[in-house]
Picture 1 (tube, one colour):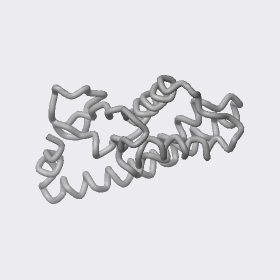
Picture 2: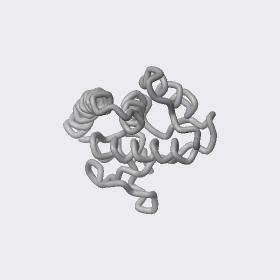
Picture 3: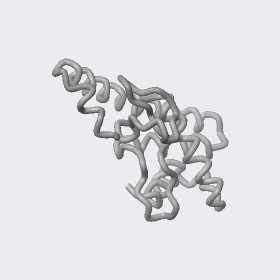
Amino acid sequence: MVYKELLDLVEVYLGGDYVLPDDEGKRLVALKSAYYYAADQCTALKLLTVDKDESIMRMGPGDTFVRMPRLPRDLTDKLDIDSELVPAIGRIMAHYIAKDISMKNYHEAKALELFRRYEAKVQEYLNEMDARGKYDEELQYAK
C-alpha cells in the first residue's frame, strides 16, 4: 500500500467526524508515532534486521533487531511496514486524530485486536522455523 492509500484509509476510519491535519508534517508525526506504537505491540517481519547501524526501535527475536520503518517522502511511496499491519497503523492514526474519547478508545481497541492477531501468526511462524532448525537462517534475510 502507498502512503496516499493509508491517508484515505484513515479518513474512512474517521467517518467524516474528523479530518486528517492539512499539515504534512503533522500527518508524518502521526504515522511515526503509529509505527512506534506498532513496535510495542507486535513484531513486523519486514522490520527485522541484524544490521546494528539501522535506526533500532527494540530487540527482536533471536539475534535480530526491529528497525524504525522509513517514513514516506511523497504520497506514492510504498509504506515500509508489513502490509497486513497497515489497517492497524491506520486505526492508531485515527485514534490520535479523533477527539471524542469513545471514538479514540474504539480505534485503539480495533488496532490492538489487529496487532494481537498478527503477532499470533508471527509467533506461529517463528516457532515453526525454530522447530525446523531454520530460525536463524530464515531471520538472516533482513541483512
